[in-house]
Amino acid sequence: MQPSSAAAAAPFDLGNVKRLPILISLIIGAFFSILNETLLNIALVDLVEDLGVSFTTVQWLSTSYMLTVGILIPVSALLVQWFTTRQMFLGAMTLFSLGTLVCALAPEFYVLLIGRIIQALGTGLMLPVLMNTVLVLYPPEKRGAAMGSIGLVIMFAPAIGPTLSGLILDALEDWRWLFYLVLPFAIFSIGFAAVFLKNVSQVTKPKVDILSIILSTIAFGGIVYGFSSLGGHGSEGSGWSDPKVYGTVIAGCAALILFVWRQLRMREPMLDIRAFKAPMFSFSTILILIVMMSLFSTLMLLPILMQTGMALTAFAAGLVLLPGGIVNGFLSPITGKLFDKFGPRALVIPGSALLVLVMYCFTQISLETGKGTIILLHCMMSVGMAMIMMPAQTNGLNQLPPKYYPHGSAILSTLQQVAGALGIAFFISIMSSGQKDYLLGSADPTSPAALASSVMTGIHDAFQVGMYFAIAALILSFFVKRVTSTKEGM
Image (cartoon, rainbow, N blue to C red; front, side, top):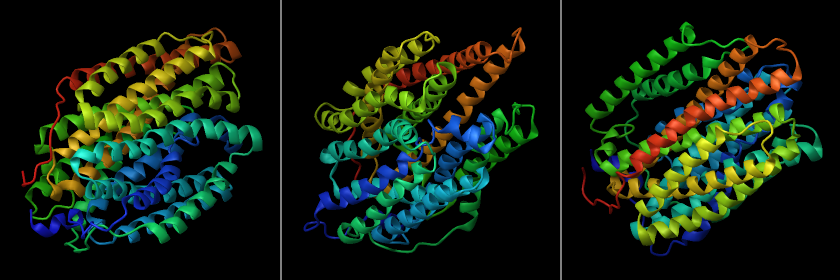
């Protein structure tokens, strides 16, 4: 790869740069944009009733958010070489604020969906800026603590989203306030960054390859859309027999193969796939994908279980998820510092084992399970997630040479969002299928008891599959080992 292709990772003289204000500027914006990935989870029941759509349709408000982010992030590896740090971040937060306003004023489902997509455009532009800036500002031996601060955002924000949503819905009784209350903070983030955020990367404006952009859009968009369509858009699920499902998945996979082939042949690729030549980066990526699927699917399934199966209010469901969110946010910076001292294996292996245990316990819960048990399991899951996510991600990125920083961070950010979207779509489709099968065999499928039991059955099926994913993560964790930064190209 030509030197110019790595220019985004080639910093200015950072000797006099104050790192903390830059990091705070990025974290404020990232927190509220990532928060919106799960902010609507508790509100899904209200949205189904208010907008007159089904669960399989309303889940697109979450899936489309991550789908858009996943499509846009590969392009960001190119954009960070065309625009300064300030331009990327301020433009991203402006888009996010505009989308938030559209959501707040949306008169119907499809306008709300458009607003969510505009929000996601901002998030997709900002996440790689956040990751790449930390890689530039901090040397490998200090990245664990810095990445732990990012973990506070990436893990804590989506974990706390359902709780905040429940509190807001209970107090104000209108889902639009979920957006009205976020908007001032988004605008504040723009003002704070305008004052304190400094440029830490060089603009080289490499060649734009339109075909790569088109292929990546079809690839990630097609795969996620196909899996998301498994549950259907109405009351009936599509299933794998629907051409809309298998057709888009096949098209997405074909485009992905062509995208990878093109990137490997280009002298200055849009997204340099050669980063996967670093073994720990590859292992860490797969491990993180499995964990992200488990995280986002659980944060979607638990609110549905508590509100439709256990008949809890949005406020009560939000409170149940609050302790786990606090635990996650508290532990992320700590695990970052522990990573700097002990390396990844001491955290990732026991974290993966804990995740397996929690997912098994989730398969055993019932409609009579107490709220205290769910709180405990969610807290244990949060501990496991904090022990896996940032240590694995930091370790994988540490093995890359500096010229691969924009590409490595973009790859991880892209695949995390795609995995989250796939996880939600995949596990919701499993839940819907199990629910439907139960009701078909029920003597009175319209009774409240049958409906509640059908939800429980579907969620059991989903968590059963989630346990298998966790076992795969545990096996992979034994292959992780500590690495140091590579100075030369791979």
